[in-house]
Every structure is written in structure tokens, then in C-alpha cells.
Image 1 (cartoon, rainbow, N blue to C red):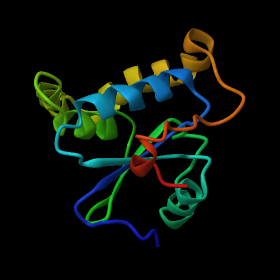
Image 2 (tube, one colour):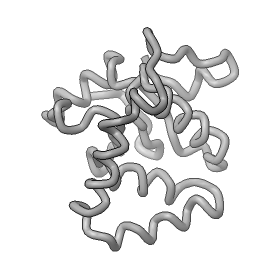
Image 3 (cartoon, rainbow, N blue to C red):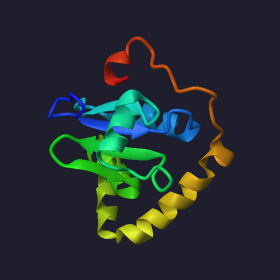
Image 4 (cartoon, helix red, strand yellow):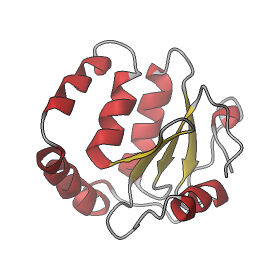
Length: 138
């Protein structure tokens, strides 16, 4: 399995998606306790987690949250768990976990399905700047 610190959380994201890349940058700026690390789904780490947890990338292809102690979370649950670890007021979004996942995921899937059309897509995965390189896994 992935050699990863137990006290960190790994966000796997679609490395060619402009919305996903903007979300990663947003998260980095608000991750005041340095909780998160990042890797594209297309990376070797991403592929290893996808294979280990048998993630169906036809159904989940935009965000996965991996925590060594509890495995993986997907879609809206992953997004809300990430938000819960960010600075105020973003952490208040955790309240939406009371909404049933099938309702939250309907909205999530709608955005995920249209993300390339609305926000565009890169030809290759984002390369982190030298000062952010330590937050990214290969």
C-alpha cells in the first residue's frame, strides 16, 4: 500500500481538470494545519489507491479522499470531509453531511459530468511550484 503518514490525508484529483486544479489551490491556501497532501488520479500513487480499493473510475473520476486509518471517501462525502478540515467558514460546510449522500451526489455528479465543458481541461497534469512540491506525491 501507499507509504503515507498516518496523520495526513491524501486528496486524489483529476490532474487535467481545471476545476479540480483550482480546487486543489483553494484547499492549499486554507489548509492552515497542513493536513492534506495531493496526487493526481493519473499518478502512480493514484493508480495504486484506485487498484487497492477497487475504485470504479467510470463512476468516480474527479476526487477521492484517502486517509490511512479509514480508507477512501468519494464524491460529495470526500469534498465535505475536506472542507471540514479547512479554515473558517469553509469548515461549516460539514453540516451538509446530514443531507443523504444520494441527494448530495446528484449535485456532485452533475458538476463532475460538466466540469470539462464549463471549466476546460489541460493536456497534462498540473506541475506544482517548487514551494508546493512537498505537498504533492508522484
